[in-house]
Image (cartoon, rainbow, N blue to C red; front, side, top):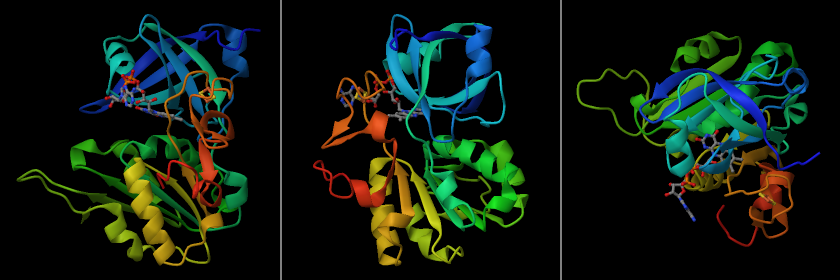
Length: 276
Ligand SMILES: Cc1cc2nc3c(=O)[nH]c(=O)nc-3n(C[C@H](O)[C@H](O)[C@H](O)COP(=O)(O)OP(=O)(O)OC[C@H]3O[C@@H](n4cnc5c(N)ncnc54)[C@H](O)[C@@H]3O)c2cc1C
Ligand code: FES
C-alpha cells in the first residue's frame, strides 16, 4: 500500500462558522475505507486539494459518528483558498488519521481544564464530544475559550449544550467587541482570567491555540502552581509526509506529526527552538 496516496472523499456539507472559517463534512467514496475509518480526539488528517497541495487539519467531529467526519478550516493561504472555492459534491484527498491525540485515558476519574485560543477549539471539540458521551468517567470539566471578537467564536450553536451539561463550566472571553454589540461574557485575553478557574484537585489540562497564546498561558499556569506533567498541549508545524519520514515537522528529537501533535509540557519545554 502506498502511504502517500490519499483516499478520495466527497464534501457532503459545508457550514460557514464565521467570516473566514468553514466546517466541511466529508465522506470517503470507497465503502471499505468509510467503514474502517476511526479516529481519536486530537488526531489530524492530511487533506489534499488536487493541484494546490496537501496540509494537516485536525478532525473536528464526534469520534463516535461513523461514515463521515468533519474538518473545520480557516482560510489562510493557497490550499485553503482553493478549498473555499469548492461547493458541496466536490472531491478532496484524505490521508490519516495521524498523530497521537488527547490522552483522555489519563484524564479518567480526574477534573479537566480545557483551554482553547481561537482555532484551538477545533482540535478540542472531539474531546468535548467524548467527555459528554462518557460524562461519568470524568470529574468537573471547565472550558476556557478565548477569541479575538464574538464574530470569531467557533461552534456557537453548541455552546449552550456544553454549558448546560452537568459539572461542565464554560468561560468565554474576547479581546474586543464592536460598537453596539451585546456581549454578556468576559473581555480580555485568556491569561487575564486563569485565576478564575474553579477546577481544583490537580486537574489535567488540555491546551490548544496559537503558539504565543500557549506560551503565556503556560507561564501563568506555572505561576498558579500547576505541574508540568499535568499539562498537555497540541503543537502545529508545517508538515509534508505526516508520518515521521521527511523530518519537515521536526523540533529537536521530536517529530510533531508522529510523536505529537499532543505533547506533555514536561517533554517540550526545553526543545531547541524555545517557542514555549
Ligand atoms: C497538526 C495540525 C493540525 C491543524 N489543524 C488545523 C485545523 O483544524 N484547521 C485549520 O484551519 N488549520 C489547521 N492547521 C494549520 C494548517 O495546516 C495550515 O494553516 C496550512 O498551512 C494551511 O494551508 P494553506 O496552503 O491554505 O496556507 P499556506 O499557504 O501554507 O499559508 C499558511 C500560513 O503560513 C504562512 N506561510 C506560508 N508559507 C510560509 C513559510 N514558508 N513559512 C512560514 N509561514 C508561511 C502564510 O502567510 C499563512 O499565514 C493544522 C496544522 C497542524 C500541524
Ligand atoms: S511531516 Fe514528515 S516527519 Fe513530520
